[in-house]
Amino acid sequence: MRTKLSLSLVVIILLLATVSGANARFGATAPSAPQAAVGAGFTFQGQLKNAGASVNGNCDMTFKLYDAAATGMQIGSTITTTVPVSNSLFTVMLNANGEYGANAFNGDARWLEVSVKCAGDVAFTVLTPRQQVTAAPYAQYSVTTDSASALSMPYYPLMRPQVLDLRTFDPTHSGSMGFTDGRYGYIVPWNSKLVRIDLEDFITTTVTSLDLSVVDADLSSFRGGFTDGHYGYLVPGYNGAAPGTSGRKIVRVDLQDFSPAGITVLNLSAVDPSLYGYTGGFTDGRYGYFVPNGGGTVHGKAVRVDLLNFTTDGVTTLDLAAVDLDLKGFYGGFTDGTYAYFSPHENNGSNGWNGKIARVDLRNFAPSGVTVLNLASVDSELVATDAHFVAGKYAYFATGFYPGVIHGKIARVDLQNFTTSGVTVLSELTTIDPGLKGFYSAVSDGRYGYFATCCDWSGGRFGKIARVDLASFSLEDVVWMDATTIHPDLKGFNGVFSDGRFAYLLAELGVIGRIQLFSGIGTP
Image 1 (cartoon, rainbow, N blue to C red):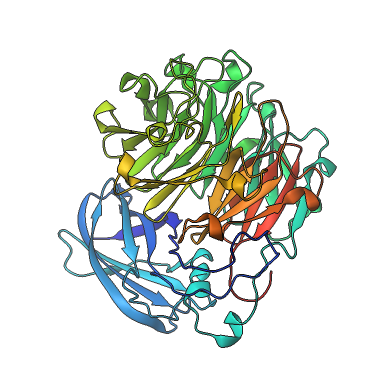
Image 2: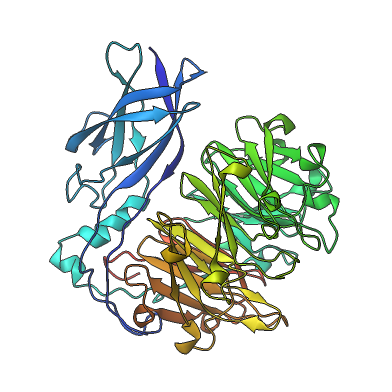
């Protein structure tokens, strides 16, 4: 059997450690060295082809870690496991029991060599080339290192903050959601210009843009985006109170051909005229999921697009409101690899503002695969949870704002106990500082969650960032900073993304702040 492995997505799950540093502002005190690490496992996702054809069924696989792209020395022991493969896609947890050794990820480059034996194969086939392990696992070094010199160095998250003002690149710039492919950051446009930032230098002279309207005049008003590693996908938002033509077209951009020639458009109205106005999207590697909102007239029609068949034939819809009338008007979502989670915002129904999370089984994208968890039944103020992410076995939801109400509560949901009994509430961050409220976006480095404030209903913008220790999930370990002390327009954050080293805070007014995430080794 001839097989070829292509890596469609690699996700590194970083486990947590505890630190001290209670109720401090960012940079005011230095947390002590990590006290304990709780694991070094990471998830490897790939696509397996047999002479170009799809593979289905269980395959035996081996995973060896090396210090070089070819030959070199093997690190640790070989992991051998049976992996289910569905439509050529597979996911496997590696190094969960530390098979690669305590010092496997010490800052040096690493490569995985994968061998496969599926049904009918006589022997294992070594797949080439080896897959380089991305930089993300090296955050593990910070929680597992036993280097006395490294642990003696303090960690100041914002000692050397960086700011990029995109208005100096383009005064008409408009957009404050984004994503990254690791090398570049992409700022999703509210107008029609997709901006690309070289994250290696983070300066305006290397910023480029792509005017989508050159391809189609309707390509504007996007609300989020994501990448499968090769392409970037822009989520069609809504245009004013009523749906417009600009809220119906998904844009796919070839990230290796950042030009009009690399743009493909998928018009959702050709599938169903009621498909419009999405806010946020994500991928499980094979499919892209688009989160239903609708704007002035909210709806619950989630869209799933087969990324290998980017045509109307590859589109599947699921009306979440058919399961529960309140399941509409969502704001963003994510996946843990097994389920998709749609974060509640508003529904314009009897309750107005919503606290119901919709969970969809990715193996059963149908009404029967939908489960509902109402955060508002735990705390009535846990609605409009616009800032969210998944880290390990938990998902975190922070409240944004809605008319007359703005606060700073964060809910933690045990994804293995998706019921009200699995919800823990961190309340109230405003007791630490009155400005820690109205969160609109968040990101995690595995150890901490970073929650960015946005604004209030009257249009006021906030610039404060809260960092929450995910291990303790306690107010005592929350630290914060005021980004406006760095730049007066670094406020009103509508988006945040991470490349594993930095968090990028996207302000409404076109300013981007870059914050170094936890490293534990040296000062930023």
